[in-house]
Amino acid sequence: MFLGGGSSLSSENGHSNWVKNYSLKKVSNYLGDKRVQIEISIDVLPPDHIELSRDCFGGQKRIKLDEEIYATEGPGIARLAGVPQTINIIIEVAKVAYPIAAGVVSAWIYDKLKNRNVESIRIKGTKTEIRKETIEIEIKKALEEKSR
Image (cartoon, rainbow, N blue to C red; front, top):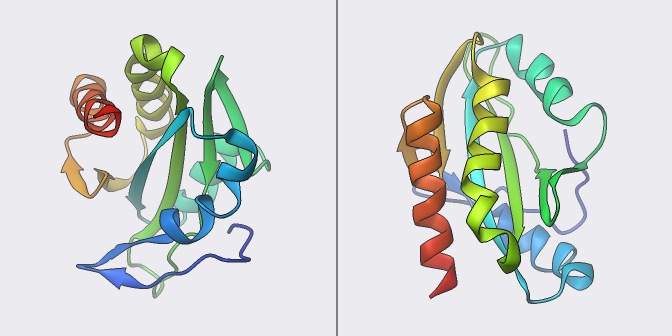
């Protein structure tokens, strides 16, 4: 589903740490230290996982959500047929975009997830209710934690 090269699907408590292995080596090289990254994992029942990936990224690996806010598709976790498939997304936010980031990202994610067969969403490993408001709250928490 995604690029490879430096990614790892090793798991700690069932949660991949591909952000550390891929994004810190590759993405940070051109983003610099002025950005923070938030990992989002979405468990989607087949065949919606393929449609969701296409709908989110349109065949691209990295898209611009707004000024200084980007989404990058991470490596998915393939499982047996009929079992939810995991789509991983890394959100990159410049500190100057913090005031609008939670609203922009939560609206984008909710828009992509509504009316789909989504089993769960995790933001930085925290299972989150699939509602725009709760997604926005978790993203705000993640941004506050990263800015410390």
